[in-house]
Amino acid sequence: MELIAIIDDDPDILDASSLVLKSKGYNVITAKNPNDGYKIVKEKKPDLIILDVMMDEPDDGFFLAQKFRKENITTPILMYTSVSKAIGFEFGKNEMVPVDDFVEKPISPDELVKKVETLLHKVEEKN
Image (cartoon, rainbow, N blue to C red; front, side, top):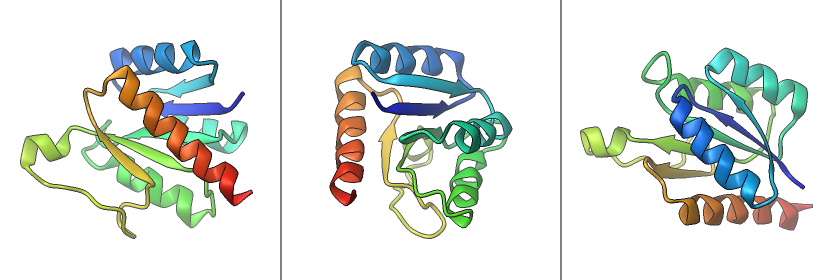
């Protein structure tokens, strides 16, 4: 089964997301900060990355996504955000935000599974 890396500083989000994805048969690894997140992605090579926008710094998720892409890590990235609700800003995929999809926190279990399955299916189609 596919390996999913979740990088988020909120332990409740890590636990809830992990529980939902594991219940669907996915293997899950987690990190609570960008440095550990970078290490697990480099070492474990997950099939999908779920990445929070705001961790230690308000833009940690953006910088980490950019770092992955600069290093030719093409793993799909689903970005968790609560920023657009807080400031009314809508994100779109671009060079500054090189991710495959966004989802607003809090996310329902059904929506999380649907987003994950969609992104993983796109990878299968490319291969």
